[in-house]
Image (cartoon, rainbow, N blue to C red; front, side):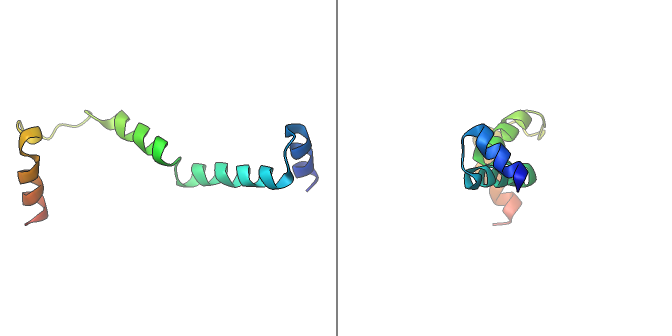
Length: 70
């Protein structure tokens, strides 16, 4: 508890705010950083894989229908 008080005083924040921020950092580290991090991860892998299909952009609905068995 003494460490928490020292952190709060040093940052000019309440102990409750330090706890909220700590929980937020922990949750992001454990479960991901939310929408922005997911977007960055998706953009990082975009274009990294090849489907082998030449008309995927034009015929994506047909491929999805086939894949989902409709």
